[in-house]
Length: 274
Ligand code: 15L
Image 1 (spheres, rainbow, N blue to C red):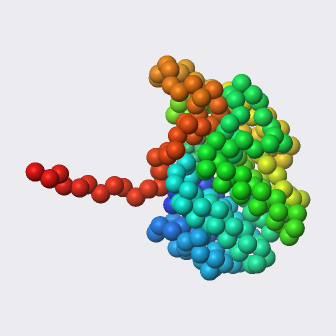
Image 2: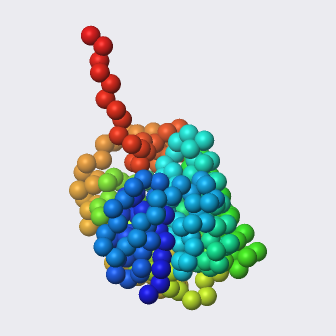
Image 3: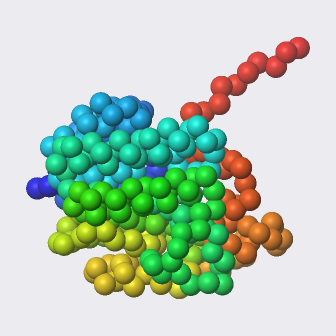
């Protein structure tokens, strides 16, 4: 059984993925935050912005699913540390430890400035919608370098929105259910002869703005389609909204300087002065 490292394992996507892949691989979970690993899985606490930690967690694994990082638009210093330095450390540590296969969950925000009335495939020029999106393009470029120069096998998934149900109109195009994600990740781990691939991490959504034929070519057959939720989602949708956000695939990321960070520690309540 292959040993697979999942970085950023305490996050929402990491939690779904480790649950879906349990029993299929020997899972090594890692994160800055503590985690009580389920039976049969190992946990290693690590801060990937430190090379020594990145080297420690990538030792002896067959593949890395590098989910760790800052997952939304936010301050540059946080993105620099987690998504530029951290990402570099994981690729470089994997190379030094002889790990060939890396799955890089990039994001729909690497191409978020394409318009919603545009269908894009895996060959389009990136059009990031945020500093976060730029950091994902950096990861894709780094993967390309490590594939060409060092012969690593790099599988980039431009992830939409991982959830059981779409939460709004934009996510009707982007829904990526946990079971479809598990299928695509398994293709990324198992498919022979991967050199450098880009696929879209979305379910088989009728309202998708992606031509995901590269994923289909590699065997991806999504089981879910957000369309079953379309009526209820559209009924909830409020009219209006920012016209730039509404016109582009990246939505609010195209206009906001900060998106609430799902991984942020809960804010401490401060006592009101009387
Ligand atoms: C992402 O890349 C984020 O990591 C995730 O938190 C969502 O915001 C998602 O994109 C999205 O666009 O819905």
